[in-house]
Amino acid sequence: MSEMIYRTLPHGGEQISVIGLGMGYIHENGQAEAEATVRMALDRGVNYLDLAAGDGSAYPAVARAIDGRREQVCVQMHFGAVYDGGAYGWTRDLRRMKNSFASQLRQLGTDYTDMGFVHCIDEDGDFDGVMRGGLWDYMKGLKADGVIRHLGLSTHDPSILRRFLETGLIDMAMFSINPAYDYSTGDYGIGAATERAQLYRDCEAAGVGISVMKPFGGGQLLDARTSPFHRALTRTQCIQYALDRPAVLTVLPGVRSRADLEQVLSYLDSGDGERDYSVIGEFTPQNAEGICVYCNHCQPCPAGLNIGLINKYYDLAVAGDDMARGHYEKLSKHASDCIKCSHCESRCPFHVAQEPRMDTIAAYFGK
Image (cartoon, rainbow, N blue to C red):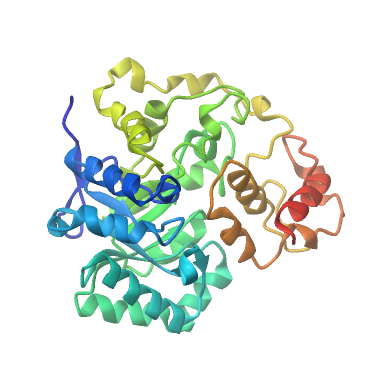
């Protein structure tokens, strides 16, 4: 069994395991399995935990697992993720965020978080609200008091990450990275491939680390039937791809059980051949014909819809991401706001029939 690999956080010097743990699904098999899974992860050298949990029941399970080991673990906590009644929710109300953060600290049995993140900030209006609504000042105050050791954010949008990067105050960011979003011969994900690649380099130059969410594209990349490439990649290939991006310190796959964790940790025992993802060089944009790959060539939408993000959240929700619905609901415009002008369809390089897809998405989410 190979040992864990660690990378250094530039601002602070913490050693961070290249494989961390996402908590979006860990509650699904009950608290006993969740606790056992976290314990197993820690025993195998995983020391970075993202605590944007899919359900509040994850917190007591994590607390029991890290009891007596708190100083060995970096936890990433999110201001904006709330668990009223136990179910995951989202807010920008400062009072609710303060109360939720205090509650999460109590449940974990700790008085600080290693990473304090603004949660899932994907639109310019979100950024402006954070900066003007008191949250950022509150978080900076917590950092000055030692309650937050490092400031950061989670986002899917390169332009939002860049705006935070320009503050000079963040040390870490959670960002979605995988071959589908970044693929160099097409503009996958939000932002062109060149824009995303430059952003990673700029983060590295600024000493800002990246923790990777969605390394498997919500599982889509692992199945040829759902992959935009119509070809399946392996977990190991996706992990290696993410780790090869500049500034990336850790990859955070979501796991449901110890069996899932074993699959992820098999990366450590893999050889160069298994890690080789050069097969993506055989993929062309035509492989994604008729499938939205969130490239945003359709922008700007006359009605103001963020079409790529609407599609992404829908695909993730259908793939089983419990938090995708909450992210979709907080968008300023929803699929039901589509005015059927055909602007997006005329511009889409992959000929996606977006108008009927907006109807499907609106029906699925109810808005």
